[in-house]
Image (cartoon, rainbow, N blue to C red):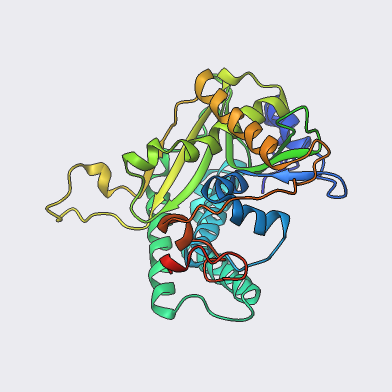
Length: 331
């Protein structure tokens, strides 16, 4: 990853160098607690599942072929952008064999999760081949079309996986919001930053996914806390979901409605004005107040079960009757 120590560092705008060279201090887990967007999402879906995972610290295998795929695609995209902005897009095209690089990351991540799953497979050869071929198709399509989405004209890569660490509620200074920004760029001409969150999806986001406020909160909070961490005005920060689709319609498919349906990339910018940001910040404060004491400890209380087909189907405790049992009807 670019870290501000490469040969082009002298040419970087000072604000980019400052961000690269001043990451937040690591969390001191002896007395600090971290929260994240994924934690909040789990709590919103089922407080009891959140309690089992984060208060009781019961470890369950939660990876899948989808998470393996997403991790590998993220790493390949970020590596490509690192080289492209450190050198040039032509150099990235020349130096990186996307199929080989993605294969290395895809297999490596699967092996890592395989070991975490007690050396048990959680996918089969046919499914793995399908996901691998989808990943190669996405990355090769992106290489051909990348000028639509990324440019070096007055634009610099601030970095990939930029950490943020902020106490969202001043009454709970030992509870820190942690997140990692997939891609951040800076345009010197407009003096604006863009925070890009990469998502992988089977067919892209429909209007319901785009309207999901909980999905939007992730980038809204990244915008808010990036602003606070580096003292950057909110109106100088843009945000975007960069959605990579595994499946697209063929041009010969009678169902195709627009050329965009054949694109592997879908871009979505959620509204991020004062009202939306206020709602996102309130959601974090409410979560902290509901679950944590002022010293950062997790409250001893009943965390209710909220069984539903959606929450239980994706819950690692759904068949553990001694821990929950509420999801057995949906198993």
